[in-house]
Each structure stands twice: as C-alpha cells, then as structure tokens.
Image 1: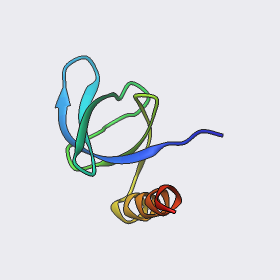
Image 2: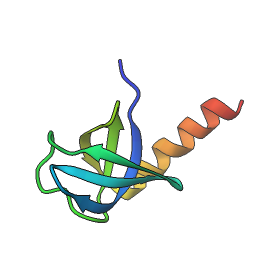
Image 3: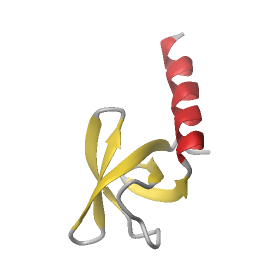
Length: 72
C-alpha cells in the first residue's frame, strides 16, 4: 500500500514535470506516467510522481481524511 497525496497542477514545466500545489506547498512533480495532464487538473502524487488524475471533489475529500488522520 502507498500513500498518495492529492494536489492541483498549477503549471506544466519542461521535461514532463508540473508544478503542483499541495494546499499551499508547491512542488515539482514528474508527470511521465500520465497522459494529457493540464493546468487545473488534480493528481495523486507518490514519491514525486503523479500516479493518476482525480476530480476536485475526490481530491478535497482525500485531503480532509489525511488532515483528520494526522491532526488526532
């Protein structure tokens, strides 16, 4: 099992990387495994790689679960 964190793609960079916003923390993420990633898409990221695209509702729900797990 892996933990993937959802984030929103803010900018597509060179060499199959994207700038992804994780609730205010922005990181460069490899998007080699995905097709047609666009600005505004939400992606799940594991160890620096976007592993799948998800919709905004699911991304926000996942973040809520993660925040609850780590705040208790």
